Image (cartoon, rainbow, N blue to C red):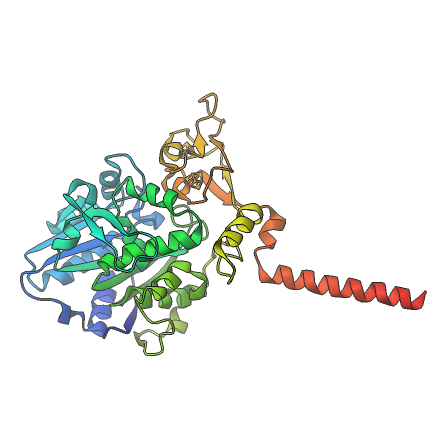
Length: 408
Ligand code: SF4
Ligand code: SF4
């Protein structure tokens, strides 16, 4: 069953039926034993209500808790660590996202990872990270169930199974990791290293309400009404890419996972159960990145050109911004600072030279007042069509010049 991925449809908002059906397809009950300690890891990015589709939907969490309880666990813990650096942030997310109410009604423990004891975890065959501190719960659990959500992401294009485990890093550790591994390729390697340490035994993806475009925190909500589940997170993410119309080879952290041997490059042996991909497919608006990020050229050249030609610029919405300070407190490289005067209508100051385009500010802004944009011509230059038209234009121009010379 390792190479099996199940897709089920949520009918009439009956999330539990879809979750149970997906787990039946997978024969996931074979993973379960009496008296287990099961750790559930949702996506708890920031404090938004369920209808904004930023965090794992409480109905998905409740359904999974009901399923786990059938196997008489000795302990169930729901744990995560949100984006941001301030103590108390994850607690706020638990409350706003509806996940706290779900845990309380199910009488299940919930805790921020940063409130638990920690230890140093070592990465086998590291791409970039050799070791990092994380909660001891991750080691003590008999089974980790990953509960990511389908969202697009300005930096990584997709945030789902692999990226959700980045949330196991403790509060202050995430910005430090962004700062230590700037650029999409290095950061993708860091994501693969973190994922490789914990590799959840089971992944159940919340495809109930998703985000496209300005995800993972300020995107448009898409009611996709599916649950996707599998035992290998890399395969699950490859299937998700196919569902949302994103080429998996353009998602660099999936390539980093393949490089680390966390799953097959070409999932020929993949067994898809439940709904066929075509029947649930819906093309998402995918944020554009540098076209050179995946090109077979040395990394420093790709980074150099990307930083000059394809770097997104931050736009602050002066109407929406409340000068709350979250963005400048959470920027890992101090690229944002308060305006000279803290009055309505003023916006934070942004230093493009310092900015590493990590999207932490956009992820944590409570008022969705931060947008990333490229210059329209530069934006067009992120597509292959642009180069095709440019090349065709040059050829036509050369032919015209030759024709004129020939006639005259
Ligand atoms: S942009 Fe967002 S996070 Fe930054 S100060 Fe304004 S409202 Fe706060
Ligand atoms: S300004 Fe925003 S995107 Fe740039 S480094 Fe700071 S947090 Fe990251």
